[in-house]
Length: 297
Image 1: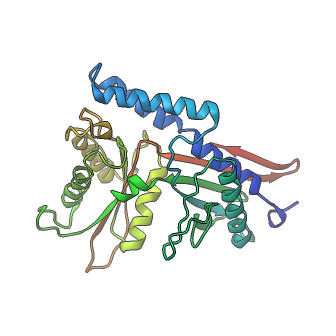
Image 2: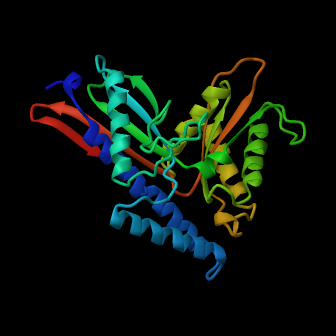
Image 3: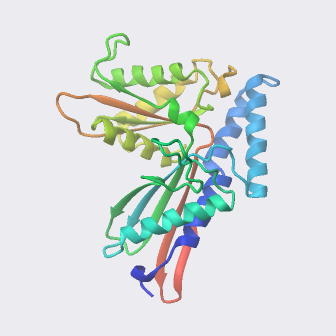
């Protein structure tokens, strides 16, 4: 057996099931901590209590955490010689099987005809990005990005006169907080904010979504960005928007920022707003003497 002959469709189905029905532990802990910080008997505490109950029921019954199972976004790292075309075919097949098994809601709509494909496959659906690396293993990250939070994701072009935001980290701080303020409870907060500084319009959006794979409690290796993440997190939670817009102390669960090189003429700040159902899962595939070794996280 080698990687070229592998059919990972079943493993991709299981990865989708886990992402759709099991909220990661760091997100659970973040929600529990947020609940403990809210006023007893408040609408904010009630909303978080309902969210946590929903999370437990979804995992117990292996049913979707949210009725909007979102766009499946796959980030795949693979060894030299593996066919990404075959992997893409297997991912699409797995999406169809997962839809049939009710792990995913049919979400892929033809933009020209308005017709739903019925199985979560279509033009560039699911979303897939492939990265060749030197490891003799396949690593897959999956994010399910819902439509409500996607609708309040946004992008700014600095300088921004009305916000007094220049081409610096202070300007970044101002526009990210504006994005949270503009959401005003839409997008199913409390949110996790993925932010990309720089790049072009397309690469910025991609980079901002990739930040949503980070753990809530990690620390940015860049001290400037780590400080900015902490400041925006604290200031977002001072806005009083709260869970689902009901008011309270928890508007954001985390802020994750990356920076890219950019053109001299452009300074974009892309904000990927993620709902409390930050549904992500990962899978590692390795071949050894005993055969196929699969682990999920």
